Image (cartoon, rainbow, N blue to C red):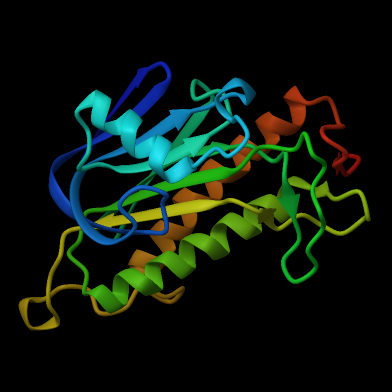
Amino acid sequence: MIGLRLIRPWLELALDRPLRALSFAPHRSGFVMTDRILWREVRNADLHPGFDAEAWLADELAARGRQGAVGMMTSRDIGRHFRHDANIEGIAAACVATVGLGNAETVGRRLAPPASAIGTINIAVVLSSAMTETAQIEALTIAAEARTAAVMESGLRLRNGAPATGTGTDCIVIVAPPGTAAAGALRFAGLHTAAGEAIGRVVRGAVLEGAKDWIRENGGVANGYLPAAG
């Protein structure tokens, strides 16, 4: 269903044909047709004063000949990406995630992150079954719920003691074949559906694995945020 290539500073997810993506990615957000999703690894040296992330990423993708891709950025080592797959009642789902937690937040209680804090969760999910646009929107909410469940399960807490639920710059991309209800495309993707179960399983698994990896690497303290004991 997908192919992955790591060619630093890029991680490229290739689809077997153009599919409909829904995202709030910094490059080609919203509903778009694409056959590629790319992560661009960035470092502090790239983030100069007045940095325009969207314009910079668009230029980088154009230089690579991937203007038509959905593009995301991460400060996480892109070699530390995680993939989980599932097949529920014939609906196949694959998730690839990079997980940095340097600017973790808790929903509804915003903190000003330390000046040095960078790090985000970038998630791409690919579904085998055709979906209506409405179902794809619902699928995005399931992926977000699974992301939050995984971060909370990791035990990460903020410096004020609140449990982390994500980061301030998370990004999610949901990809599926386009379709209509009349043609048999999925109309729903909630938690009671096979699609919702598949999405939740792969996202929760990949993000939790990535979060645990980030916590191990950072030795319990990073940018003022403290992973909980245990």
